[in-house]
Image (cartoon, rainbow, N blue to C red; front, side, top):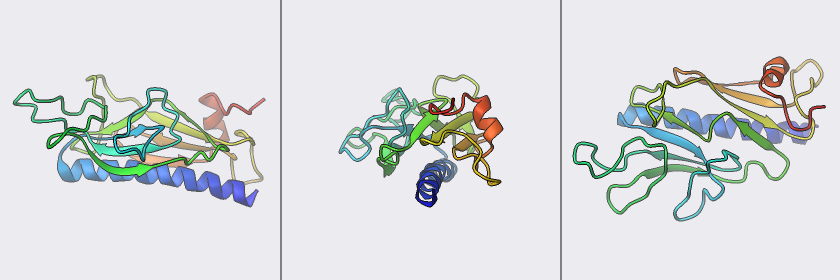
Length: 179
């Protein structure tokens, strides 16, 4: 149990740290910064996955060129490296899942604008985002300490938090191993 709890906590904290890094860099650079799920984050040219599996992720400055010159689309939510004016990778994290954890996100990427608030590349209003992290124990209560699963919630204002609230996790669909 100790090992499984430690693995779960490590994965949740790693994704939480990536979100905090993205938010901080967005404010510092006054630019769009995105965290996206990636099945190949350590590749020379990593890609974002539409399915949002989050077995790995990348954090990148989403600045594909000068928007005034028409040379690229700034803040489009997709990693597009290019010589000189492409997106800059800030962090690569791989295989947090280690075949025992399942990430269940409500979206495949999270984007922060220059003000640190959530942003959406399609211009739609940001919504609360959540990522459930599950293992074989599901979202059941473990003693008095809360659920075995973890829930990362990201508010519209861009503040991510980790929770072990069994009721909240189950209200979002629980974990695959829940009966």
